Length: 276
Image (tube, rainbow, N blue to C red):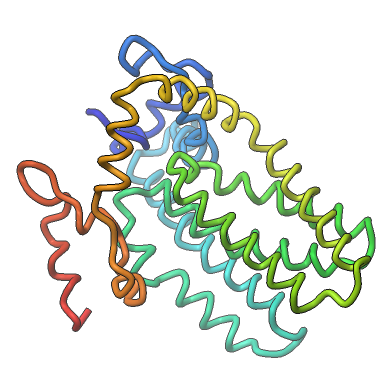
């Protein structure tokens, strides 16, 4: 079964050893393996279950628990950073529960790997905020390390690069907001920029194992004229979700996309109804 970007969903562990190498012999006559990000944590969970002789169903349940709990814990941490210590416990709880079960995250269940970017973004933003507010070099280094290591939890979602763009847009927009609203002098601004460079450098270092093959792949396919046609058709002329759908948290672009024999999801029109 051709599993697409995320491998065979029936038995992801079957792709584990293939994703450990920078060359993928299964793509045509062979190509640079730009799916290396699938290795951790997505395929690791299924491979561990396989080594323990657990059923695929048990592994799927473990994966479901992982990508359902992670966004809740991440949002709880973010609200804890934004709120005053010891206050707004209800806000933390309800924000965590809402983010765990919001419709948008559950709509993209058919693409389980992509969910991890949404799941880990609040946690990365929390460490990003703490690092920007750090008063000492040691604190900056500590939060930059936390930021870098936690980013590995979202490595699997990076096989869909537009989702990765969402993460960095959020981080950079907050950086600008912080520089404008919270810095009182040039020294504070320099400290913020220093932390940003440390965090970005740490992110690049710990994710180098999938970043390098991916950029090599992009450079290779960029040389093919058909690739440019495909990009123009799929991105510039393709379907996308309206802003109102995003406000309703039903903004999943394949709901608006179709192929020759019909839409990607037959049930998608039901979610366009205002009741939803």
